[in-house]
Length: 393
Image (cartoon, rainbow, N blue to C red):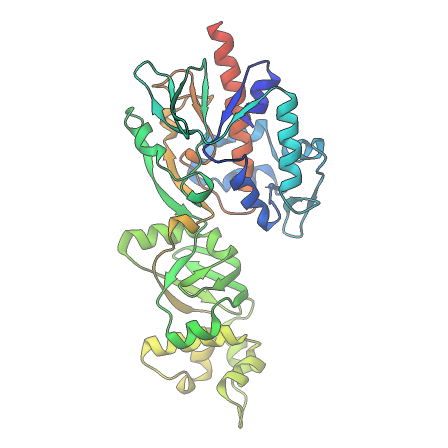
């Protein structure tokens, strides 16, 4: 995005990419349909960036969701709004958009140099790259670092740049998983039976934070949209004391009294699982979670009273024992501190060097917020670099 903006402003631009081809992580994002952005009101949208909101507001307001949708349409990929307000290309994948984008960049004169991994600066301030043919130094009038976070390192962004940048005296917050899963010590019986099973229409709570949505049981723990939406709170709790208790409500629209009434009927010869399935409309995996909680408490679920069952249904404690590995996280938190950047995302200690995207210290839930901020900061640094170049001429 920075390259397109710079080229449109008359600059001669080369994109140096560590990978053998362009946009590999962009294509990975397309596996889920390429959720470009979201249609919620801009004040609510901006609030998704939490502590980073003041630092990203100007960029997102300058290149907002409507501008991103228009940009996609201009590349022959019109978008549509899903039922949740999320915005996707109508073809529901990334490759047609990426191909059209690369054709536009080529037509604008943007050059690409692949298998060029940036490893820092030489003694004179030139950009130093590791290439198949050995080290290469490039001298540029302005440079934009868009090195990503540290999730999915096989696609190019492995976070190794943090050491290089920090060596220049630039504050870099530690890279941490965001929009990630969490580990849970499931019993062998639960893990073998319910791995891959979805939990739908649930509410998750930790401390004062509650999120409605869906989750998925994995062999190692739990992940999914609702988990990602509160991953920052869950991560900080787990990293703070080594574990955290997540509370799951299976029937959040029914209060304890309504559930108790439903569960006070005669079970007869039905198994407890069948009774819970019919009386409270619980899924097998939900009942399995209740069994896990009962075992952890040292009691048999069959001995719970109707009132106790009702309370457990909407307050199942799940002990999170860790954060899933960063290389499988959707995104990462941490990165260059905003205090190191001016209003145009230029590094104060390195005039002419700009930074954008996920390598900055922000995070956001899934839903289009990640790509939107990446596009918006790319556009912003493109404009900022043009401004810098004009001042130097």
